[in-house]
Amino acid sequence: MPRYCFSLQVRPDRMEEYAERHRAVWPDMLAALEETGWRNYSLFLREDGLLIGYVESDDLVAAQAAMAATEVNARWQAEMAPYFTQLEGAPDEGFVALNEVFHLDDQLARVSSEGN
Image (cartoon, rainbow, N blue to C red; front, side, top):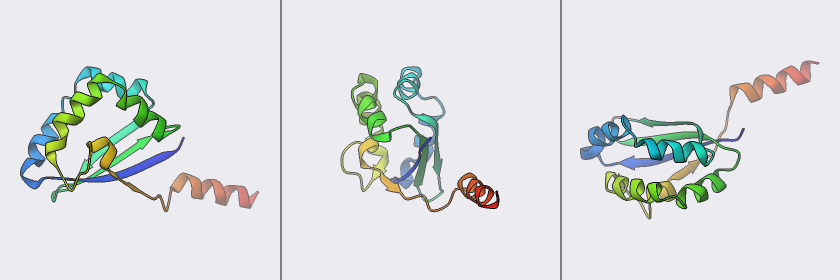
């Protein structure tokens, strides 16, 4: 399954509140993420506010479009937007995608196939 990683910047003065909001994400938001194809989704927050997200999805663009069509996502994004700096649009549309440069399982599979 394709893997995606992205970054955003949380306002330093809102980091604690941001983390607290994610300890109890709305059940309907969780269900929508699952139903629209977001898998193994995690967020990591560095002490300076750098937020790194990781998600697996068959098609992230399709998963984002499906989420954008839900009412719960519109409410969640509107509530989350004030937590971020350097953001154009909603948080789920304004993140910076990162390029994967290494994945252990891929490398091990390559080495294994070359050895056979």
